[in-house]
Amino acid sequence: MTGERGDRPWGYYLVLMEEDGYKVKQFVVRPGKRLSLQKHRRRAEHWQVVRGGATVTVGTDPGKLITVKLSPGGYIDIPLGAYHRVESVGIEDLVVIEVQMGDYVGEDDIERIEDDYGRARQG
Image 1 (tube, rainbow, N blue to C red):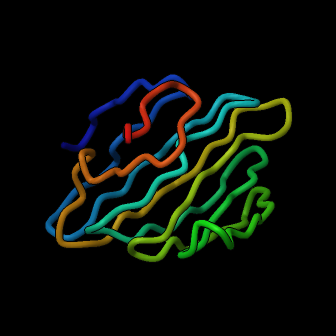
Image 2 (image 1 turned 90 degrees about the vertical axis):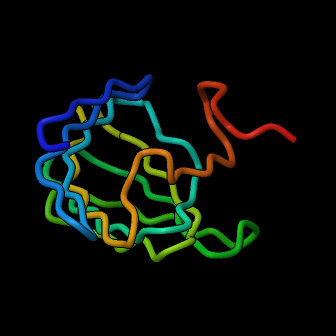
């Protein structure tokens, strides 16, 4: 839903636009905080950094993840099914524009592998 805000332990997101097959969000990650190591079964993502510094971890094999540093103007594509995580580095909030593309872009299409806030899957 356009205009939806989701508060999270790491910061928050705002839904800027949503249509069939895609969603555009802004997410803000507080300094020193990071999202879950996660993957999605039904969507790919494109992240564009507009403020702050980011360390992004991404890869299709959990044993061979790569780390990429991004600053304003930097971007990364997260393929469907890839493991990924972003951390805010530096002293200001990290602001990212995220474009999700897939046959389903709901918030429940998140499989958390590791999470600093106790939300990862068990077992």
